[in-house]
Length: 322
Image (tube, rainbow, N blue to C red; front, side, top):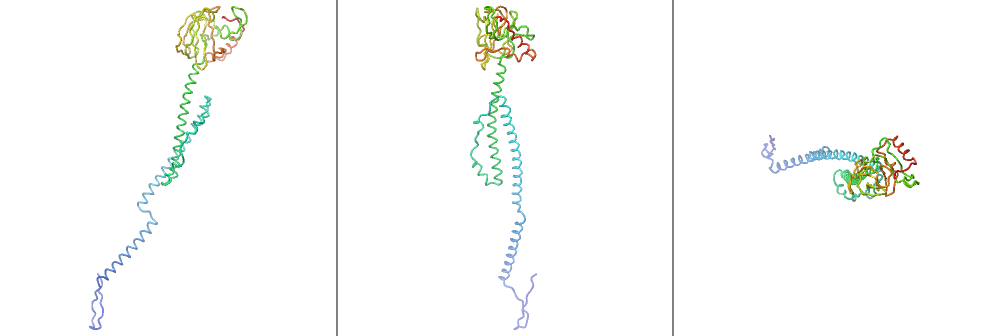
């Protein structure tokens, strides 16, 4: 309740009630409200300078979560980069070393574009970290492309190597585990007809007429021919990679020209045709049409001991059968 104010009137010698004008009351109220408002603003501003607003707290929480996620991504990128380093090292130091084919420099130099492509990220929160992450991702994508191309090439090389290994002559052309059929080896031998030293371009295996003759490697039958002299009935298989094999003095053919054959497949039967003194198989290995010593091409068919025995037998300077 407002207090009543009185003022002594010297004329009437009485205390008279004093009424405060409305505008005075209004000004006082307005001043009080202004003071309260100003004080409130000062208090709020001071509190905001010390304590975060609700919106600021939400924003800070989101930024903290983003920072945690960025740190997690950077960790995963470092692990991926280490994995790529290992793959690239194996590619260069192991896989390509096996095939003897280094990675071409043109394949290594895979471009990733200019560095200014990340400038727009610098304006964002944690922009530098985001730019680094994007740069690493682009680098990994580029390295993955290079590695994919490299592995595709290695797969082709592996298939080619596998094909080559299955194509190179690697077994004896007749069953000869006990080595009793080896009659005459490669090199200077006595010609059975002319009785003079003559170069023998293959290896002779004695066997009864009709004994099965095997292809010594995968390939394509290039020649199937019959002659009254020389090699008689013979077959030439082209194995690719510069390799060919000849099988001569056969009694019967089991393949045709142009036919694909695999190692161990029966291609003919032993005979005594052409320039021959008895039933046997004359076998040759050629590289780029140059005769080689067949004894060097039985590594898939003999043990170490058998191989040494075969070399000793083939080196005997005996008479050839053809």
